[in-house]
Amino acid sequence: MTRDHVLTLGTTTRRFHWRDARDMQRIRAVQLVAAIDAMHAVVVGSCIDPKKQERARACCLEELLVQLDGMGVDEVWLEAHTQAGNARDIGTVANLRRKQALSDTIRVDHGYPSTEPPLWLSDIVAGAVRMSEDGDPRYVEPFLARIARHDLEISGR
Image (cartoon, rainbow, N blue to C red; front, side, top):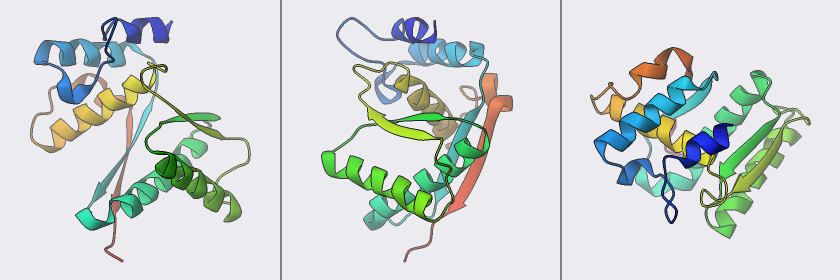
């Protein structure tokens, strides 16, 4: 059911992407997210050195996975990026498992938004949270009560 609803946000040739969406499309997307009975785990990294983006991603991913695992989530789909980036993500998962910071029951995989429309939901939530950070909270307000937010200070080392 959610997949079909999410698909209504895109077109027959293009996926929904928050960055490219107009105001009315964003409002519709936010309404769809608000109608889904789910918690949304969000990790917001701050003080990120632009030269350390991969490290920042790994730190945020670690925190996100630990939080999702603690919430009882057993399957996580990450948006695929480059082959090397995907491998780094899987390395982050393996590192968490080695440290026993992540249970063996949680499954982490990659998917492409073009074939996995539910990945659009994380883009919507992240976009709404980002706009709130920039002073425009109207998009995040409809589902703000269902956000489990974790702020993460990322050092420059």
